[in-house]
Structure formats: C-alpha cells, structure tokens
Image 1 (cartoon, one colour):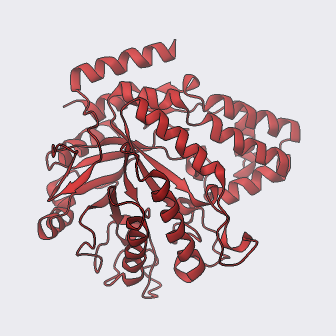
Image 2 (cartoon, one colour):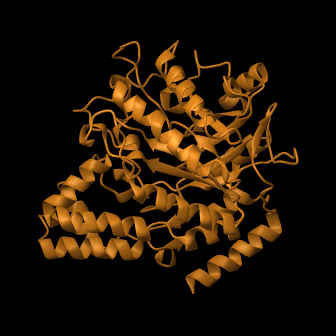
Length: 411
C-alpha cells in the first residue's frame, strides 16, 4: 500500500512540477550545465548517504561516527562473520531499484552516489604488494547495478568519492577515517591509489552517457598550514596539495575519458576555493555545499562571484538536514541562479528527508548499549536487532515524507 501511494504521489508531482529528462552526456558550457543539444540542465537530485558509507548520526549512534567504529561495536556483539554478513545484506537492502524508481516518479533527474573507496580497492596497508592496486568487484558491481537502474529511469548518476583512501579530512565520519593511520594528505601511497581508482572508474564508465559527472573528492577538510585553530581548512589561503591532487586525478580521468564532467570541491567541507582556481579543464563544474545558513543571495555570493570571474558552472552538491520551509527557500534561491542541487540524504532514521527508516525496538537495544544508556544485549538480541534493521531499511518499509517532497519540488 505504501509503495502504491508512493508511486501515485510521484506521478502527481511530476505532472504538477515537471521533470527534466536526460539528453546525452552533460557538459559545462560557459556558466551552465547543458545537455548534448546545448540546452540548460538543472540537476535536481539526492545523495544516497548511508548506503556505501554509514555515518553514526544516521543510525542515532551519537558520537560513534565513523563506519569502522560502528563495525567494531557490532562485531563485539555478534562476531566478525555475522558482522560481515550484516554489511553484505545492508548493501543489498538499503538501496534497491525500488528507491531509484521512486526518485524518478517523484521528479528527481539525478542521484549522487557517495562511494567508499574500500569497496573498490584494498586499503594501502592491506595490499599484498606495496604500490600495486588490488581491485574489488563488489563496489564496481554495485555501481553497475545502480547505473542500470538510473538508465532505465532516465536519471543521471554522479559518482562522488565520499571516503577517499586514508581519509580526506579531520571530520572523521564523512570519510570513515581512522586517525591512528596516515591521512590522504600524509600518505603519497594513498594519493596514488586515489588517482588510480579514478582512472579505473573513468575507464569503466567512459562510454556511459547516464553518468552525469565525476565528483572527485567530497568535502576535503584539512589544515595544510598546520594551524591548530583551523583543522578543517576553512581559512587556508593556498590549498596547494588539494589543487595538485585534483589536477592529477583529472589527468588520470582524461587519459581514458574525454567526455564526462569533472566536479571539484574546495577545502573546508567543499567551500574554500582560495588557491584552487582557475580551472584546469574545459569541462569542469564547481560544487559547493550549503547547510544551516540563510537563503539569501549573500549566502552564496562568493560562489556566484567565482562563476562570473572564471566562467565555470555551479552545482549545489549537498544540502539538507533542515526544515521544509528552509528546503523550499534554498531551492528557490539556487534555481533562481540557474544552479542545480543534490539533497542529503534520501533516507535515514529521522524525519527530515524523503524516506524515514523506522527504528526497530530490537535495534534500539544496540543503540542504547553503544551510547551507554542501556545494558549489553545478548548475541541473540543483537542479531535480532540487526535483522530487523535490515528489514526496515527496505523502501517498502520506509515512511514517505510527502511534505519534504513537496518542499523540494513546489514552485
């Protein structure tokens, strides 16, 4: 019944508000993103946060943020084998064709895939031969399936390197970073793996027009100058290591793929572009992220100024985690400036996104224990909680928040 109502409501939204359909490869043209006919494309998308990369807040886990920490906690209760099986089933259940079908029915024309590099290649410290890259089929197979679903629904798929080898910043959960190991910026081997992974991805998808673009590094946040008061790089003036890595990634992509858009992000969670521009590729888009600030021209003025100065299109690559009125106003603001957007996320335990995952009482026992608010569950109780969560993350068992969809799409 939920599924039927979901599709019917989506059809109504499409009828009322329209949905841009794909027209071949996307590209940057002056200050706009256009299709192969040269027509302006406003990307209206959403990020699949929590699928390949869990963040603790999406599961109500408080300060237990990075995925490796969540996995350790689960393994303490059920053992490594059951934990591995849980994560395999998570990847099979959390995002499925039904989710993409729903997005298409609601009016979205794009989806941003937050990728975890470790689904595609081994971590540097686990490589059997130092300096050689082992490729893992799991991540590529998941991406292939997602691309097939997007192609069937005429939705562009944007690949986003959300968790980079070593981790790209001091905000640990967004990159699943272990601070006891060298970061991306402290490890030449991790940067080499990052470049090689993008070359591998671009070679695989070079001839796929439903790939909308390559978002090459999500929210870098690193204090390159060593200023302890600025660990996330919001005030960095040069950002030379970030620029150099993005230049190297672009060269690797262009060695196998001349057609797809390259999407770049600045330091300081994607918004500090000091020392980054001018662009080094003719088919490049500047992404910015917008959270918890006013929906005024002044709130995005610095990005509008960069667009004017460097003739580069803008894309709001991530926004959300607010209320319906803020959503409506933010989208009205950016679309008024010919800027597309990608909301965050599609689903989680919580209420301010299109799909809500219901917290099973059995899983609540795990959460309470993890955050020191309850006793330790037995292994049987923990397994039941994990199984019930896997059931609840499936689309047909989610709550559809039509108020959020209305806020995103009403004019």
